[in-house]
Amino acid sequence: MGSKITIIGAGSVGATIAYTLSGENIASEIVMIDINKEKVQGEVMDIEQGTCFRDPISIVCGDYEDAKDSDIVIITSGIARKPGQTRIELTQTNVNILKSITPEIVKAAPNAIYIIVSNPVDIMTYVFTKISGLPERQIIGSGTILDTARLKFALSDHFGVAQKNIHAYVFGEHGDSSFIPWSGAYISGVSVDEFYELMKARGKDIEAVDKEAMLTYVQKSGGKIIANKGATFYAVSRSVCQICARVAASSDSIATVSSMMHGEYGIEDVCLSTLTILGPNGIQGKLPMRMKKEEIEKLKASADTLKSVIAQIEW
Ligand SMILES: NC(=O)C1=CN([C@@H]2O[C@H](COP(=O)(O)OP(=O)(O)OC[C@H]3O[C@@H](n4cnc5c(N)ncnc54)[C@H](O)[C@@H]3O)[C@@H](O)[C@H]2O)C=CC1
Ligand SMILES: CC(=O)C(=O)O
Image (cartoon, rainbow, N blue to C red; front, side):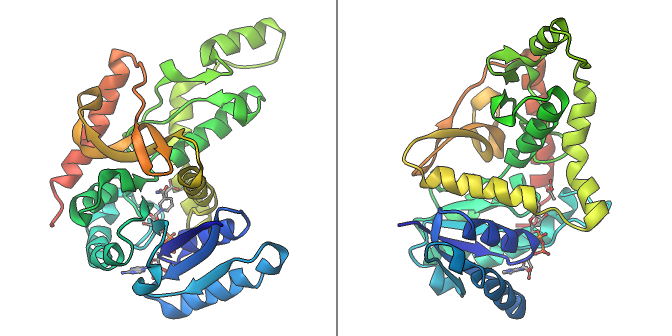
């Protein structure tokens, strides 16, 4: 029996998450909620008409009461970045939308694991944590899981090595203050720098990783895709489905997702991404990664950037 998953917001991201879930075996029931009823009805019809090729799955256009007993609720409602806009510029509008939907969805599904996707995702995760009244373990911001996926793709492409062999992460804000803790970046147990030396010694035609350029690639990917096609939705939807799969799994796993900090690395009262243990009950804890002093400073700077945005929110 799969999970019951409710998705709020049936725009590009919400609909693509529903479509991606309809091709996997994580959910047996998907409820989609949006203020734009015509759009959500169209999305439901379009997705359900492709489900004859799989085990039965129910996909419905619903309202908040239909979210009752959801195992997972995914929040994608809100406005998205336009070309040239930063995620931070969306803050107050999306906070207001989040404030309007939170009482209704929490009443309907108080025991669900919540995955926050709307941007700026770390701020939205923080606000939801503060206003929902839910235990923090139930609240996961998609955070830098997408940035980490972008980094893995870029490193795999650079070295010509399978992404599954790459263990490297993006920490901090899902945004311009994120950074890559290179001291924890490995390719099958070998540091990225050492891997380069080893491949070069084997005669592989390869360049050393330009770390600044790689961070820029990660940070600017969203903006570039939005400039080219108007929105990003495929990679983020795969990332969110991965979070769903992990909280539906029987064993724990580690991902870079956003959640409330409680003194880890000297940071508190802000949501951002570090290595986080996910399991059937949601967030099980954080995995402290040994970082260099300057990397911890970057994480603190990212936390300060987010805190300065939080300070401007009209609650
Ligand atoms: N965290 C991440 O990695 C990523 C986050 N995003 C964010 O996800 C959000 C959604 O992006 P898109 O789907 O592209 O936007 P979109 O504009 O296509 O869809 C947003 C949907 O939210 C709905 N909505 C607005 N207010 C609502 C309310 N009160 N209740 C229910 N539904 C409501 C709209 O009707 C619309 O269908 C944006 O904030 C975007 O920035 C997008 C990509 C990656
Ligand atoms: C839109 C966004 O947050 C991203 O693609 O990174």
